[in-house]
Structure formats: C-alpha cells, structure tokens
Length: 157
Image (cartoon, rainbow, N blue to C red; front, side, top):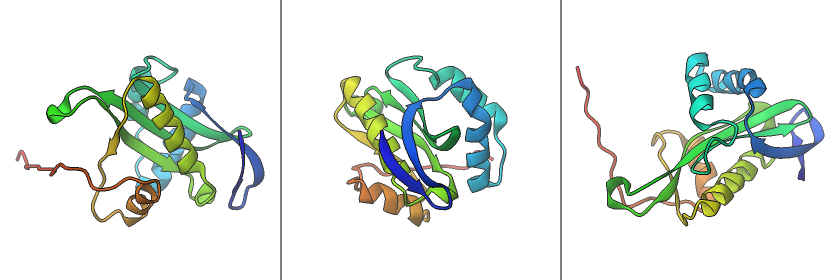
C-alpha cells in the first residue's frame, strides 16, 4: 500500500484490489459524476463478466482509501485483434474529482498492467476521444504514446 492524499480527504491508505459487488454503487456514482449518466445495468453486467477475479485475462479493479472507492479501472487481454499479438486493453478508467492528482490513476494503471504481465502479455493499449485532453495527458504521463492503428467508424442510420 502507499500513502496518498486525495484533495479534501486528508492522508489515507490507498489499496488497489478486485471489485466486489458492494463497490458497485460507488463505481456507478464515480462514473455518473464524470458523464452525467447513471449506468447501473452496464456496471452490473461488467461486474458479472469482469468482477471478482473471474479470469486472469479480465480485470475490474478499484482503488479504495478507508471505505471510500476513489476510482476504478477495467481492462482485458485481447488475442490477435487486428492481427496483433495478444495485448492488454484498458477500456474504463475513472477517478473521483476530489481524488485526482493524488496518484490514484497511476496506481490503478500499474496494477492492471501487472495483471496483464501475469497473463503473459507485454503491451497495453487504450482508446480515447481525441478531445479528452485530461485523459490523454494522464496516459501520456504514464509512458503511453500513439499506436500504429487508425480508428474508423460509420453511422448505421
């Protein structure tokens, strides 16, 4: 464990661990704080697929200090996607606004990367909106850089 000081929260022990069903209310609230949407069904479905150490290739972790969940991260190992060797993908990461700049995101990313290494992969990827400067800055500060892919999409109207 490390000592972390979340803004407004004072010093507290920060522990990164697998999510538990009892954490989902706080996870949903953290996401809703950021997105303005309460996605209860979505997070319960993710918990059933990724939670509580279901498989070493799927990770759903939370960072807690005391009894407060400060953030969460979700990722998985994807095999041979787009012709690339198996690698870890982070597709969900959020930290309470009051806990940002306290190392919470960095601790969770390190923990999920350790899980990916344990699963036998040596690369991690993510995808984010190009106008999301905050998240882009975070991932770049953790050593991530542009990948050799071009995302494409099409409206299905």
